[in-house]
Length: 112
Length: 122
Image (cartoon, rainbow over all chains, first blue to last red; front, side, top):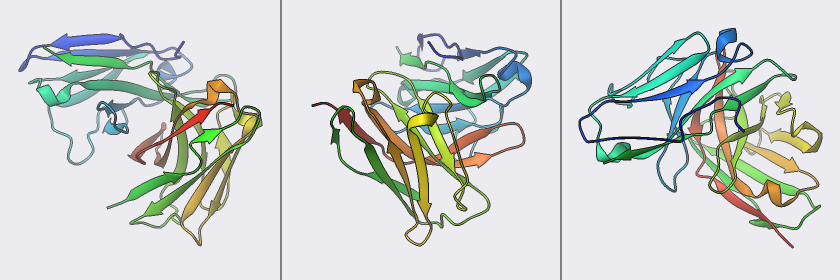
């Protein structure tokens, strides 16, 4: 069971908007540790999508955006495209039990 | 363009030691700007951070794996290494090496290797 909770799956039609949530606790997201998001295409290594809650690396389309509030964070994808079909993971840091990076269990995005 | 490449045996017997090498291309591992990390992903499952190392050799790792993990670096070869002892089938995974950024309120990976599948089986 993952420390950060994500929905196992979400779906949307091309052009639509989808939101992927990432829920943590007061020892990670709620402790003001940043949240980062990765996209993993089938059979590929993960790729950094959002860092420090809201920032996009160079080359990531502005269709992808992130936010954080309290003990949760969200990834929003607008103008959904077929190529967005992938697994998405959130990641943060947890200060309990000597401290460690923590990940969500991943969300499979299906483009209908 | 920075590239990271994992290498090592794809099959390890239970109770033995898993050893992997990460070679960094297109950039120096001897930099004050980044750390270097190992992560893994069991087949069909999520991601797990194993541990991280600075070019000076300073390391820290996941408390759940700490007793079995050794991470080291050879700056002359632009490589860093992972050793995981006493492996079991639960250690079967794709192992990734990565470049890590340390920010004010967290740490994250900005470059990933392609991954190396390691099976633990007799």
